[in-house]
Image (cartoon, rainbow, N blue to C red):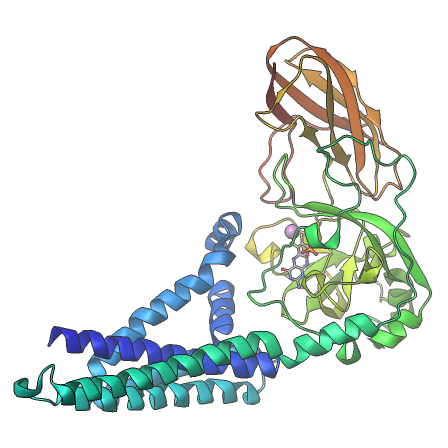
Length: 506
Ligand SMILES: Nc1nc2c(c(=O)[nH]1)N[C@H]1C(S)=C(S)[C@@H](COP(=O)(O)O)O[C@H]1N2
Ligand SMILES: [Mo]
């Protein structure tokens, strides 16, 4: 009796996951949001700001999908168990799951009813697998006590296990096939390989590096570049399908294709991008050689109307941000980027096109997979993060970081090298000072600055006695402002405060 309940629960879980696997395989193949991802998106978009901000700090993105799968596992087990005596519970229970999935899928960005097809087929797979498994279980359990553990029982148990094996096989193969053969994923890789972009390879400016081991590379390789976005599954967009629509408070609406974009006069620049969520001493920052087209002349061609002060940028995944129009038009190298470090953008960093705006945090400017720009006013719009309590304008704050010695390190006595980075993009750093054990501030040597839009490396050498020490760094910008010591949290508009590192001298 107990065993049979467990067997039916197991069958329910297996049938449920078979349906999820079929849904996954189909949605990967047709490049649509899968039902589980759509539910995760739905949960994120309908959670209160406090929870979303909390989750952002506590890697909520990583636990959302496992949590949904855990809840589904429990639900599938309950459904399977109930189906032992009431078959209609399986039909209705899996049906309820499919209805929830359908609602979530229909709320995804750009949804059409065709997105319901993979949900429906997933549902058919759930009920079908449950029917196959249930029938074998029923046969097995219809044996009376005299047959228990006899040949007949063994034979029927084998039948059941064969069906279990077949169902597990179908589910696994679908999942793996979805991962490997997602049509557009393959096409995208081919496209990225065959693109011949009019871009140059990065050449690190002479003197930019202080050449101290342990300082992060001046140019961040794309593979090491931090990743931040709200997407549970990063969109796969083909350059050949991409277009950007510029509309709203403009004299002429414009639609640009990828070829239009790369046919324009190019712009290339070293630009450091960082996240507003970067804590003091944190590593949500990177510096790359970006290539693309300047945004200002494109916006100018559209002709922003008087009164407009914002550009609402939207990604193909529905995420959006509003960027000050004057910042985009003031002559800085705000661009629609197609390449990073001389290569087409990687999928995760926004392939085929993203926005990069020197001097602003990513959350108000760096839209990945950007497809829409609406010229508007801040009064009229409330973008994804500003709705959740983050600052509207998002200029980068001055910051500096000690990277050598690392925290807790033990270094040999004598001349100790201290080094790191400092930044305030689009203003530029003019000086960096360090302080050891609360003593006087002494100037560090700065690496060459490529432009005001990148970070600078710095280094200093200090003579230290054996024992425990603390080194603190602070920067000064090109206007002579000294970095504030006042500690501020990353919410609402970026952290402030000096970075210190404790270490020992042997
Ligand atoms: N589509 C989309 N673009 C986005 C985001 C996002 O969540 N979705 N996050 C922004 C934030 S908060 C930052 S800091 C940068 C990070 O860019 P990266 O992942 O290429 O480093 O992308 C921005 N662009
Ligand atoms: Mo960010």
